[in-house]
Image (cartoon, rainbow, N blue to C red; front, top):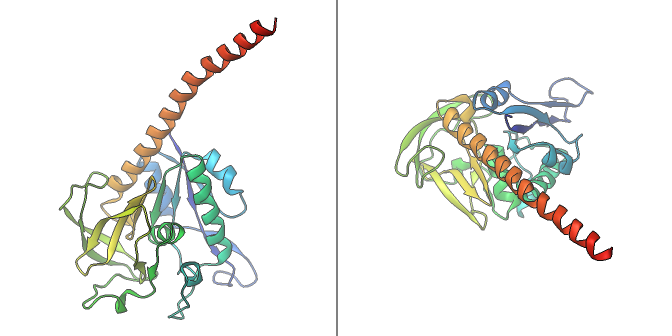
Amino acid sequence: MRPIIGITMCYDDADLINQGVEYSYVRREYGVAVQQAGGEPVFLDPSIDPLVAATLCDGIVISGGQDIDPALYGQVPQTDDPREPRARTDWENQLIDACDEWNRPILGICYGEQLLNVHYGGTLHQDITHAHDNPLEHGSSKQAARHAVTFLQDFASFAAGEKVTVVARHHQAVHRLAPGFSVAARADDGCIEAIVGNGHMGVQWHAESDETGEAIYGAFIQRCLDNKQLAKAIRRIAKPRALSGLWRSFVVKK
């Protein structure tokens, strides 16, 4: 059976789409990428309990979004760029905890990578134009940019030292890396572009929008499938032992 992959959605509580109506929304590219990589996508928002979502799904993709509230990493806002509502971010933080409890892998995309880093104790550059001497064009939510990234370690099907061109739509990025994570890729301007840690992976670019999608989503889906098969094998081993223990207990009592 194909693994079930939950995809978190953006949350509009600021009349961005239609005045007076709240929306959950996401680009269709995410579901297409999951489907093409061998998973079955389901779309999630704060209306589902995080623990229920983690138990139903074999893995979670945290999709892109607006800026993360800097209060979550101990800073005050330095820009007036729109922020993702805390209703989404707080729920996703609970979802990450639930995934850790149930050993569910997470793939963080753009905002999703940043949230993984913040959740585990890292910080962000609130605007990368001020973070590097010669910053590249990394695009925006409305206008994508293409630039190269270089892998610093083996990541998905990419080898350390390999360089690829990616599609980016962000103005923030990982600053101080969270404990337990390592940097897997950087852009030529030094911007952190991929991280791994705690059984999760994150990319700053939008792999579902470029040629890296097959490798990134494929590796993630395979990880979810391996986890699913391992859990099934453990249950097969544990069940006879549990039944055997119950039988011994019954015999002793008799």
